[in-house]
Length: 73
Image 1: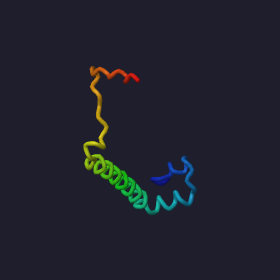
Image 2: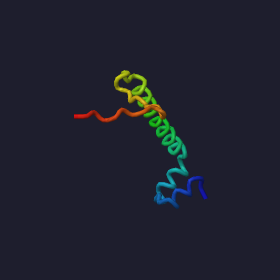
Image 3: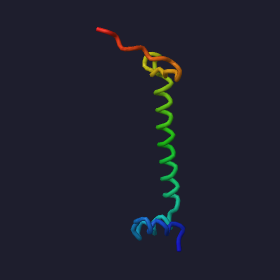
């Protein structure tokens, strides 16, 4: 029994499980790449929101604020 035999239960081929058991560094490289991509997405989202102009931001209405009645024609 290898360290990555649980992959066969989720659909991995026996050859893929054998490769991961032989070279477990591949699995950890995959995890590092996925985490790096997630961090890059979070950084892009932060830069996007930090550089918005004030007029581009949506203004939140206060809960107690009364709404204006519709204009009469």
